[in-house]
Amino acid sequence: MDWPACTDEYQKLIIRMSAPRVVIDNTICSTATLVKVDSGRRHSILLDAVQVLTDLNLLIKKAYISSDGNGSWMSLGSIHNGRTNASNGLPALELTGTDRVGLLSEMFAVLADLQCDVVEAKVWTHNGRIASLIYVRGCNSGSTVEDCHKINGIEVRLRNVLKGDNGIRSAKTSVSMAVMHTERRLHQMMFTDRDFERTPILKLTPDAPIVTVQNWAEKGYSVVNIQCKDRIKLLFDVVCNLTDMEYIVFHATINTNSDQAYLEFYIRHKDGNPISSEPERQRVIQCLKAAVERRASEGVRLELCTEDRRGLLAEVTRTFRENGLNLTRAEVSTMGSMAANVFYVTDAIGNPTDPKIIESVRRKIGLNNLEVKELPLICHRHRAEGEDQAFGVGGAVLMSIRNLLRRNLYNMGLIKSCS
Image (tube, rainbow, N blue to C red; front, side, top):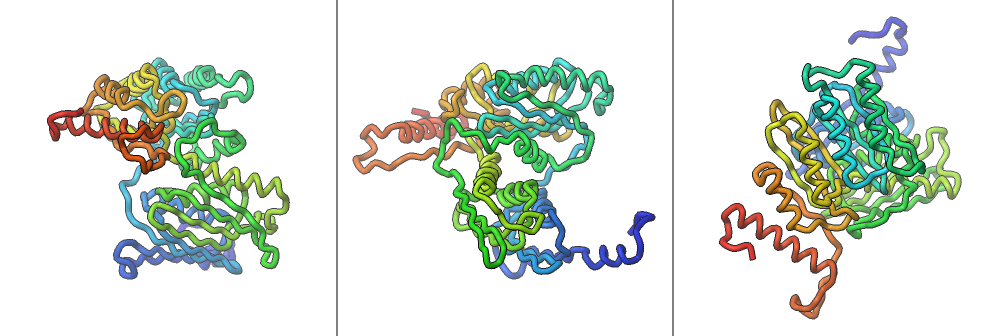
């Protein structure tokens, strides 16, 4: 190991003694892998460990975290789920502003006009705000955009597109050359933008997280409990925001049951004190709810897989906009000559999208290129009066989903009629 010249022997000894010890065990449970991490305690050590598992697309089903004295111990039960994504090392455009229908289409159109290829991008929306990280390269050279005048021109054009909040909040744009964790940076951008203070206009599902915070005076901890729908990267999202709010997790338990997750954290602020006021307690609750909700999937999940070409994203998102579809989340990636993109869409006001519109968009973009992968979970009540009785919005949505599935089966030739 190479040491900095200023590192003395005592510091080297402390670093060696604090090096984490990791044990991976597949024998204890037939359906999960047990990961044990024992390390010296420092701020963000829990986030670092969870981030590694997250980057490997591992779903954490159970976890026990304990930190006594100067040591930390973590036991994480994980199930593998999917593939990994590598950082591309290109400059990142960081954009925040007020969300609106068609905004992403306008942004990608500007980049296409400026001869910039989008290599990778992630876009989150929450409570009327948008945050995005977009990695670009020059169309002609195929290499990173390094010209300062061109970078400044990109920022100015994108800032003009983002200005849609009538002076309530100014749009923010910047270019970063630093290596960063994309999703952690998105959380930081949303947190800085104070999206947690905004009141959502519409909620499609009853799956809003339940967050409580109480003080355990005898031990000097604040106890945070979260109950919400389980999903991949949930623990990362919560720990990321606790870290950014400068709280340290001393003990924690994470359990999942069916599709529900139960998380309990014993925390103190980095100054050693528990939460000390009601405004601080409410702020923690708001921030943790936002952390859970930002990545929650609203709308129909559409996956685009096709040969990459110049202006592809501008063309696809323009088709969404022209058909009244609103993008709530997007993940853009390229692999060689292929584009693999994921979009979550609703109608213009956040309601479930008409299946007929989805099929119309698929025909315009290409039925084989754009596929429906997930449908939204809509709250509905079962009516005892029978299926032939009028049953409101929930039933109408279910009928729309049924029709969409039948159309897909019809297009695949698996049924003879879509009626």
